[in-house]
Amino acid sequence: MADRQGRSALERHYERGSFGAAGDDGLALVLSERRGLAMAQVNGAPLEGGPGVMGCVTEGDVSLLWTGPGQWFAVSASLDADALLAKLQERLSSTQATLSDLSHARTVLRVSGAAWRDLLAKGCPADMDAMIPGDCVASLLSHFTVIIHCVSDNSADVYVFRSFGASLWEWLQGGAAEFGYTVE
Image (cartoon, rainbow, N blue to C red; front, side):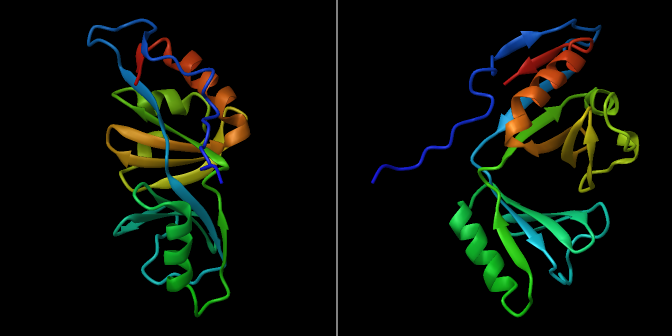
């Protein structure tokens, strides 16, 4: 049997290089796609020690992002989807939580650089300036339903439904042009 190879929703839209107007300090943004992540939705789990409202907690190689009451989004860069689900099932075996593999269903974009908050604030009603590393918010960005995870003072990951990945990518590029950006 052939190995399954995931294809990026951005495959025909992704062009590396530098674009837009560079300011006095050069290009203010870096846009990139994060590939190969295992992702799962966790519903109805009473997670003690889990993230609080708008929070993220990382335990070993799994990060849990709070997305709503009783809902978390689990992400791992080092586990594959089966290993992530097995790890979550073991941890949640005594609960009635449900798990759904979403590794194939999301495009994850990293926005980094000095102007990342300004770029996302163009289309998101959430207060980007108030976000600190570890915060996450399920919100809208332009007309896309997204999860925004503040990874550091200088970057955020944006999770969007795979079918909207190319459209959001184009929106980000259009919004980033005034700041100048690099695609890595």
